Image (cartoon, rainbow, N blue to C red; front, top):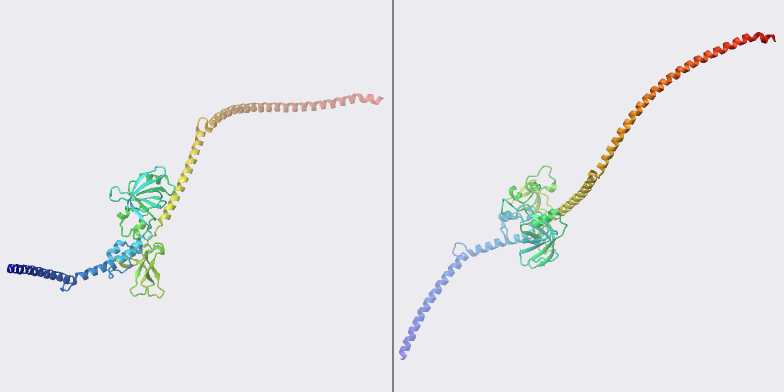
Length: 435
C-alpha cells in the first residue's frame, strides 16, 4: 500500500515537472520576444529606435520645427494663419499663442442658432441655440447678430447680412429672446423678418484683419465682398502705386539673423483676460531679434518692396455711422413726403372746382367781358371825341372868320364915325364962329 502511494506521488511530481518545464520554456520564449521588441523600440538592434522617434515627434508637436520658423506665428503678418501652419510647422505652444492672438479681441461666438418667431412690427425674435450647451448667455447681454452666409449652392448663395445689435431680453433654456438695440429702419426690419438662414451671434463686433482675406482670389472675394469695396481687397498685398501714402505701405516684422535688430518679441500677460500674449518691444542696446521693414512674406520668406496695405475698418463705428446716415435719409424722405403731401393738397385746392384756379378763371372771363365793354366805350368815346374835335375846328374857323369880319366892320365903323364927326365939325364950324 505504501509503495503504491510512493509511486503515485513520484508520477505526480514527474507530471508537474513536465508542466513546469513547459511553462518555463514558454516564459523564456515570451521574455525573449519582449526583449527583442524592447530592443527594437530602443534601437539596440541597429535599425533605429521607435521610442526616440516618438519622443522627437512629441517634441516637434509641442515645440514645433525650429528649422522652418523664420518668422513668429503672427496673424498680423498679412498671411493666412493656415498658410503659416503649412510653411512653418509650429508646435502646440506656438499654436496656443496664435490662437490667443486670434481670439483675444473676438469674444464669444454662437454660430449654431436658429431663428424662431419674429415680431413683424418690433423686430423682436426668439432664437434657439443648438450648441454649446449651456450657451452661458445672460439676460441683458448685448449681441451683434448676423445672418449666416450659405455658399454651398453657387446658383443661389445667401450672403451674410448684418442684422444689427440686439439685447437679450429673455432666457429660457437654450432659447433666448432678442430685441433690437437700435431703431430699425423699414428695410432692416424687412431683412430681419425675411431672413431664412441661421443666425450667428457675436459678443464683440468682428474686427477687420488682412489675414482673413489673404490668398483669396477674385471669384472667392465676389462671394464675400460687395463690388464697390472689392478693388481694395484685390489690391491688398499687391505692388503699391507711386502715390500710395506711407501708412498704406505694408511693413512686416523680420527676424534679424545677426541679432542687430531694434525690437524683441516679448511675452506679456493680458491684464483683462489673463491670456498669454506677445508684443514687439524696442531693444535699447540695438541687439534685438526683429526689425520692422517694408515688404511682405511669400512662402514664408521675406520679400522687400512697396506693397499696398488695405486700411482696416472699424466695423462697429462704420455700421453705427451707416445707421445714423440711413435714419437721416429716412427723416429727409419723411420730411419731403410731408412737403409733397402739403403741395398736393395746395395743388388740389388750386385746381378743384371751388379752387383758386377756377375762381381766377371766372375772374378772367369777367374781366375780359369788362375789357370788351370798356374797349367799345373807348372806341365810341374816341369816335365822339374825333367828331367833337372836327366840330371845334369848324367852329374855331367860323369864329376866326367872324372875328376878322367884326374887325373889318369895326374899322369901317370907326372910319365912318370919324368921317361923320369931320362933317359935323365942318357944318357946325361957321355957326360956332358967328356966336
